[in-house]
Image 1 (spheres, helix red, strand yellow):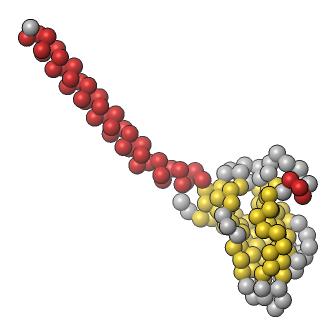
Image 2 (tube, helix red, strand yellow):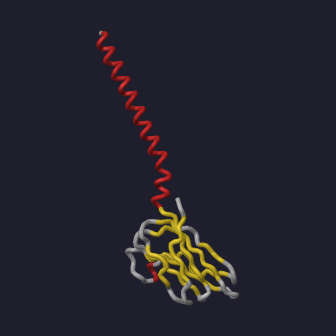
Amino acid sequence: MAISRLATSNPASNTDILLYTGLRTILTSVIATNKSASPATIRVFVVPLDQDATPANHAFISYDVTINAKDSLETFRFPVLLGDKVYVRASSADISFSLSGVDDTNIAGIELAPLQQSIATAQSTANSAATVANSALVLALIGI
């Protein structure tokens, strides 16, 4: 379950910038840092694969959130699916963005491995018990 930095950007002010396009399902967050001595606002939004670029179709993660001077903000975690596009926008050119993520397949693999082992052990135990029961029945019938 490794965390990876997937994208960074220092965009021009008041410009929507494509930060990342989903290559697979991944759980992400964006860190925005204000490097200036004045407050600035940011937007972070996702345009799902099956939607056009119309703002009404955006899934806004942050909308005109203020970041104080010399401060940072991290969004909550949000999923990015295959083909989704993550955009960022800032009111100042002194904002830098970093998108990090945790790969969904790694999480599932870690959680499922012990369960799969337990299921295999239970199946093996059940098969052994069935074999013993069948042998006992055969011996009982032979004794009749």
